[in-house]
Image (cartoon, rainbow, N blue to C red; front, side):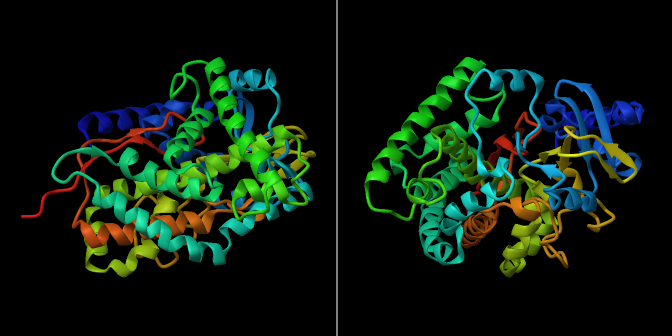
Length: 423
């Protein structure tokens, strides 16, 4: 870590502990971009684990920061509803969203509609299909790694993390393979605030997402006329519960599947490189015993936490841990904080690839909205590391990565690395 990064984190910690507890606000993208959010969550877990922020750029909202409290909210969909959205949006983003047609998706629905729509697409990530996907992912991972430059710096995010996840997502959609990076681009357009990603204005963002939906409308029209196939678009076009869905609902589900299939896995692949460089003794441990890859994958998903939060809306007045949450209040589960809760996870800030219970993390959520593609994410991360270990003794970080400017996607825009030449 550079001296500048250390100074920045030290300064941020001082400011956070000098701020009155009632004024703490975890919805500040700069804190995630600079990786300085951690002391804020430490304070909230210790001093005010069910915390209300008022008058922020993201409006008023409750923060749930302890592991067990997050699990309690996530598994109580009767009181904490997903209807109306699952991310905390800025007031500016909310105002812009209201100008456009709404795009509901099954992650932002409650039962029973949620259940039947999720069931329609879940076969694509069922164990039988993952077994078929495994060799395809392995072949692609090998080709990606074999094409990397040796002895010179390159961006791991671009050449490896984005590329592997784009290939897998293109296969799930049966999307034209040569155009697969459009999926990466559209995901970045949808998840980044204008000015901090590929677009510079809300109007441009709308134009670019419209191109995405027009493209996928053509795919729907084509597949609806053809016999059912085993891809996500065909499944939606032929599914009993989805074939008559409104086109904006289709677009909402597309956005969910594009983002869910792209951001989480790609940022965990990048996070594994960063973590193993930050904790070189763990990299030594992995080299000495590659059988630890499965455990390392789960530890990476916990330690990285690729999505910082999920949001719910209270359906009724509800007393929770001594606080009175009112009907209509926004309630934010900070998965990033829950995965650093030392009352549940021992030594949570350390990256330990042979933890006794590496799958004990909250990154995939709990309850009915638990990530539908969690096993596919684990499969891609496992395979890429099995292939890395066959080829390279080390992948070395050469500078601090550039992190995403977002309170939702917890990831990396770029990560300069070098694979040393063998002597």
